[in-house]
Length: 95
Image 1 (cartoon, one colour):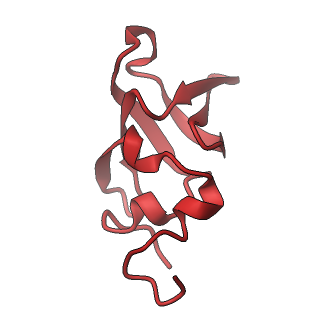
Image 2 (cartoon, rainbow, N blue to C red; image 1 turned 180 degrees about the horizontal axis):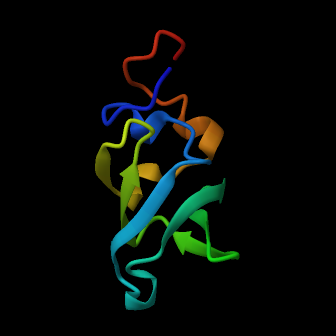
């Protein structure tokens, strides 16, 4: 299933390009790169040969989809174990 703005929060995030557009910690605003790992509460973003661990609950993210479209999401909508987040209710016939 391709990544779209409608299914982004239920999709695998590893491999997508992301930028932090707002956060309670001003030091992480503007951090951008490729998601290399995800836990329940953090995203690991690789940039400039470094990996930053960004908490999901206090940040807003702008994602660049493979189609080139930019989508903004609140981090609290992403809080869940990655396997559980992709199974949550929605339009999937596999739920």
